[in-house]
Length: 127
Image (cartoon, rainbow, N blue to C red; front, side, top):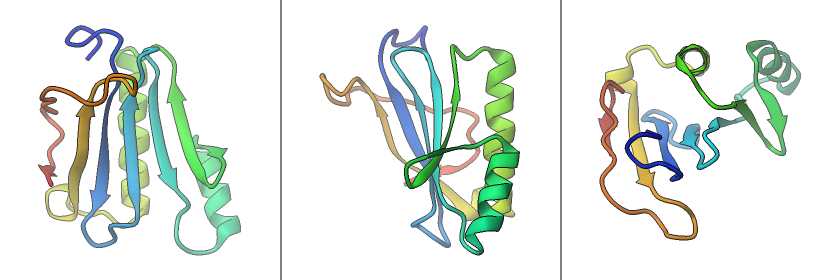
């Protein structure tokens, strides 16, 4: 992404079709940081907090986040592993059946979203 649109924000949300309120947001910030944000897990709050912390998430207000500074191949793999682990923990069994991508955008907040952002290899349908 930094090569295609340097200094721009790219973002999308991964939505569980069975529970649309459970959204995982992914963004590549203009600074180059890769950010992941998810809401609390359903169930026992204490157990959820322990599991989220153990997985590598940090509490951020009412949500959880993970930030990968200046992502490289190694951090992209770590982010993909964290996303996959979280989706499985939230009951996703078949990504093509259970998930869709939405709110796919590219552009900074000051300029608004613009253009077309193709997410190849995501493996889930856009809604």
